[in-house]
Image (cartoon, rainbow over all chains, first blue to last red):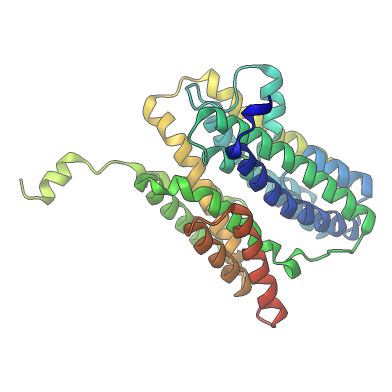
Length: 236
Length: 104
């Protein structure tokens, strides 16, 4: 593969490593918090391996500690429901397809579907680099998240609160940086702004997870302005 | 403890089912062209909503000052086309620094 590993790929690797570093520390705090909440260490490690979705894991552990196992499942699944449209976007037939028809790739690739791997893939314009970005980011994050969790379980309260390191700001900033190239398109920009505004307004009113799904309402902003109304507007 | 094991199992199975479900559905149903064009936009809308709510809210309420300020620094640097690693580290450092100064 030698010569194919160009500067663009190296930049990709560097970016993936940056987000993985943050994920490892957040995983560390997740491991420590989950053990402190009373979960056995092996179960915390298994959760990170099998669920592999940070937001849902924090939410579920919090609700479980508060004595609501059903709410923990419902909240976690609601938060993760966004993976259905992600999967549709990644596997839609066409030249931009990230996850192909081969079963090993589908089965493994689905498990590596997280916000960052989807955003990294979307940020690439070339189909080949799209796939590289998806697998690289997903794989690196999987390793980092699980290594971090294991370390957190073993070390206990080393980094209990990721906020002291400012990691709660790193995740949204990273996500927005990844989205930036897609937002150069005016339609995508409209959809993103309307979707984010709807989710933000719904956040105080709805359970966690639901507001983000409501952001799909932002897609109405993709509708072209009807010709008839346009003609009416210019008085023809 | 048994409840916790069941919760983790249900979350693991449910999450994987939703991840794989979308991927398999993409082949099973032939989506009309307009809908297929909307899918990348749907991902953009979801990710933007996730980023903005994570930046500005915490447990359904406003997230204070340090976190949004850190994210804002990150966004400005991303707009100035600085490397991704710089964006992430600067956002975290800004939030951590502000908290060190006592900003919520």
